[in-house]
Length: 110
Image (cartoon, rainbow, N blue to C red; front, side, top):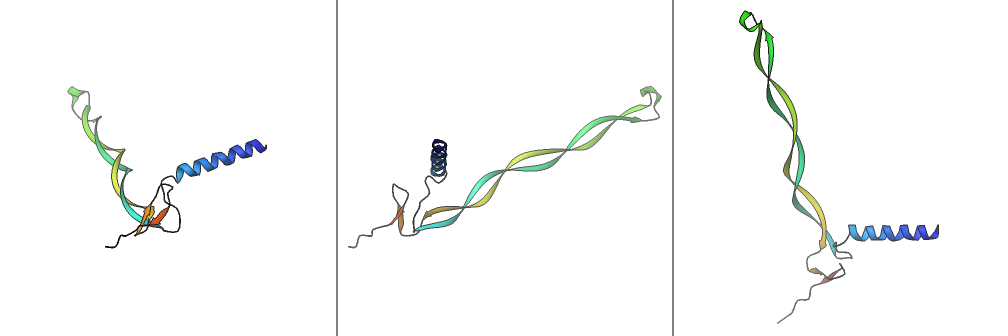
């Protein structure tokens, strides 16, 4: 039981590291809105012609005449939409270093 719990904790920690990998951590992290293009599935109605037979008074056609009618077909397509997502990045005046923390940028005075 102890080994299973230990294995579960390692799996959760690894998953958390994968999910938050690359995002800066610490006190100097700001959340910034960024516009991003994503594909969204959109439903649309398409007019489709189809042939059918209707009764008509023409004996040469056996009292059946062809007629073209239009029906609706529901289809889906991917449409690019611009959405706003919030990402974490270092605040102004701070830079991200190797261990995903933000430190103050040094400005050299002349």
